[in-house]
Amino acid sequence: MAFPNVVGLTLREAKIVLQKNKVDIGAIIYNPGSKNLDTLVVYKQNPPNTNENGDTNYLKKNNLIDLWLVNSSINVDTLKMPKIRVVIRHSSNK
Image (cartoon, rainbow, N blue to C red; front, top):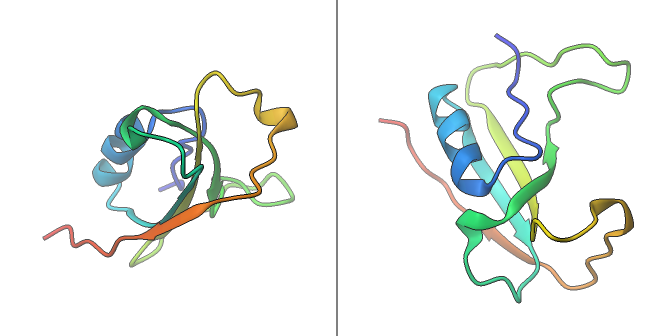
């Protein structure tokens, strides 16, 4: 099964997609001034759903994904985030 692409989704929407695909969130990187993480938008994910050649990345056992979030009103093409907060969550889909 292909690794899901959650770029462009809110964190809340991304969590649903990832949970359905049995992918755990590793790190969440966001601007520390953000108040409600669930409404922020994913602008980058690692691993991406495709590699540098454009080939599909596939799910493997014990999948983790890191997500970079921004406010939906920010133009991600000009985004610079000098200060970040990293939240590492280890969860279990049991």
